[in-house]
Amino acid sequence: MPKKKFMILILSTVPFIMVLGNSMLIPEFPTIRTELDINSFQVGLLITFFSAPAAVAIPFLGYLSDRVGRKIIIVPSVILYGAGGILSGLASALLKDPYFLILAGRVVQGIGAAGTAPIAMALAGDMFKTRDRSESMGILEAANGMGKVLSPIIGAAVALIVWYALFFSYAFLSLPVALLVWFLVKEPEKKLEKSPFKKYVHTIKLIIEKKGVSLFFNFMGGLIILFLLFGVLSFTSDMLESRFNLRGVSRGAILSVPLLTMSVTAYLTGLYLRKKGKYFKIAYLLGLIIVSMAMGILPLCCQSVIIYPAMLGLLGLGSGLVLPAVNTMVTSATQSEQRGGITSLYGSVRFTGVALGPPAFSLLQSGGISLMFLSGAGLALTAGILGFVFISEQRVLMQTG
Image (cartoon, rainbow, N blue to C red; front, side):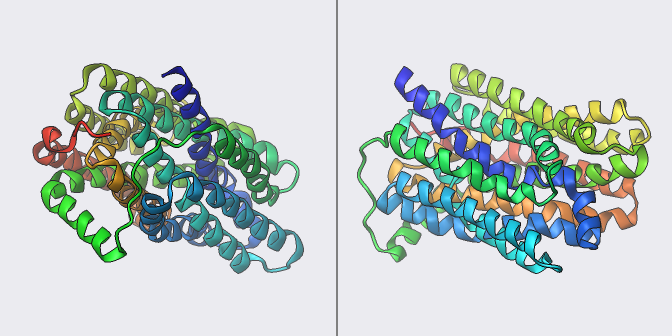
């Protein structure tokens, strides 16, 4: 078990660097908008053009990972992720009007990201039984969250060199991670899925028919959490500069608050769920209620540089309760031979939430800050209640290998 835990720690570097793909850019949105002479909606598309291709590619890479293995997908994907960063960085450094080539580089990065964290989640699911799987999912989610926590600070520091150095940093981080995973993570022996794609899709359909309602509301919970989190972060990045004149590391530190509380809560929640082996629905409902509360209070404290970050911390706490519970239920819903397909669909849904959050919040903001936040509060509360009613723990928490 200790050796497996060491491999999980190595594997956790994959979601760590993947999450930098979006979170490291968000604190520098005001700078990027000024340097490229674009509007807030166009800046938000830097997230969308990363996350939308990832959402499309994830199911196909999940299928391949069930057929050829997890590592053979993860490692080239990490390298492709770094290559996309180089393309965006070179375009920014060499061209007078680089915006569209930056978006092209973001598409390449997104396709690479599709084969990283979601497949790493499937690999972790292969390595542990259900109870231990909860702890491993907590570690991966904590790494994901810690990447978000550090990314504003890393981004602010790197941007001191020049703003487009952010893109080159992805390549700098990707190579060592690819080497660590390839040489130090041992993939458990299991029967690889050799069925044709049509049969594979049919198998996934059967799983969805049997557990579709529970999976749907788990997917919905993950989507809404990421949608709200990235929408709020995108809005907050601009607000901190326009209202409080905060830039650089100061702005990054405040943006780190919800990500830090999410990371710590996700890890502790994973440990607790592993110990108990139940209460997944309670964590799901409680987390979304807390997120709804935070979203409802945030518009009331936009004038306070102290209370507003505290409410951001509450948003992160609720998110950290939901995600490990959802991750465990999703990865436990299938046998290991089909786990890549289901977890990849879940990863696709999560990326969809990330892709939609910043532009949606940019559009909702035109109707007023209160409308924007209260809409999110209602969405979170509705998802929590529906998920608690319709998710069946017994149906999704299989004792699978």
